[in-house]
Every structure is written in structure tokens, then in C-alpha cells.
Length: 159
Image 1 (tube, rainbow, N blue to C red):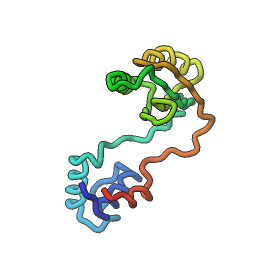
Image 2: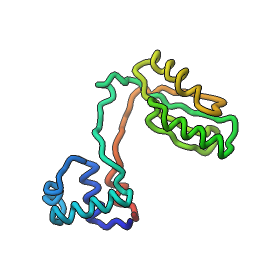
Image 3: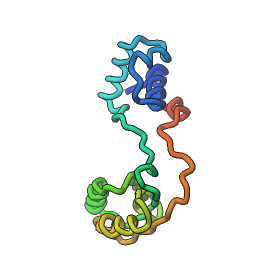
Image 4: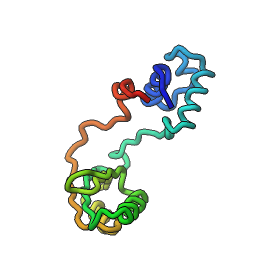
């Protein structure tokens, strides 16, 4: 779907606050609420907007640790990569997983309450993933920034 400047303005406003009504958006963007609703529906149907979610304070939920886990697999066969990706997608503590180039095959971000909780996650979830040859974990000391898609990037997209 090709996005014009108005679509990008709607996306930027929704990234800032996804709970805004079409009427509130129409106060910021030079379109009627009906036109905004049509554009949002089109972006949802095309997959540009994948969904909506609340931003949750992890620390308030007791999730004080973010662990970056580098994983190397025993082989890079298409079958094993598929098995690994299917399994990691169901691991409840993994909040992101990236297929990597270079020395490691995957990079995961994992949330844990504390070191004992991460030890449990390591034993019960990570080490049981298919084809794992090596796990290397790094503990984030402090999060500096975490944000949704920055509007500066959104403005540069050709979409």
C-alpha cells in the first residue's frame, strides 16, 4: 500500500497515542473523521497497521531483567531453522527474536524477574529449543531508550 503524507500523519498520531478517536485525529489532521476512519481501515486491511497494544511498565510487573541471548544452532538447514523459529515463537519469556548474519544465528531479548528466574527460563525454555549448539547471555544493566516506530523514520518511508 502506498502511503501519502496524510496516511503518515495518521500513523504518527496513532503511534503517539493509539487510543485516539477518529474525531480527535481529525482535530490534528486536515481530514474528516469519516475519511480518517476509511484510511485507518485500509491500513489495517493492508497490514500496515498490525494491531494496537498498551505500553506496559515491565518493572511494575516485577520484570526487572532484560537478557540478550545469542544462539548458535548445530546447523543452518532450512528444516532446523524452521523448527527453531516455530519453537521460539511460543517461548513465553522471549519478547523478540532476530535471525542474524555473522557468528550467531539468532539474537533474542528475554524478560525475567531476577537471576533465579532467568536460570529457570534458561533450563525450561531456551536450552530446550531445537538445534541449539551454544547459548551466550548478556544482562542489560539499564535500558536507555525503548520506543515505537519513530516518526522521523516513518516520514522517510516510501511505503
